[in-house]
Length: 102
Image (cartoon, rainbow, N blue to C red; front, side, top):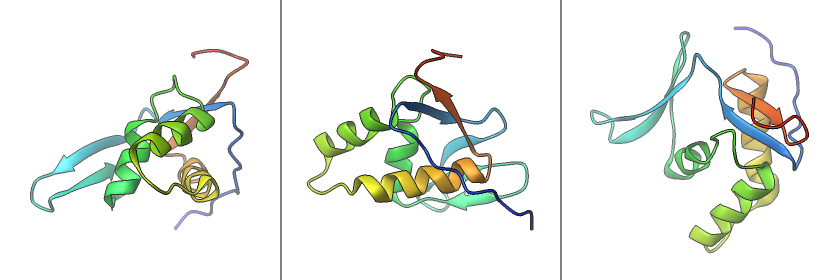
């Protein structure tokens, strides 16, 4: 197992799936999965909803705001921890709002 370096997402980061990662619905499991060359990660509904918003256009703040529009209770810190873990595993790329849409 490879080690991961801690990552902290900033409010202005624009997360998107890394090129080698795919978000798919797996009919056999009845759940969304995150596919990487090394692993398949089964996601719960909330995790899938967060990742569907990681399009490289929305900022982290925008993703949280969108989730708050959909769900009664959204924990900003929990969403950020989820994004941090995926960025540390190199499943997400964090584009900077200042740099633009790379």
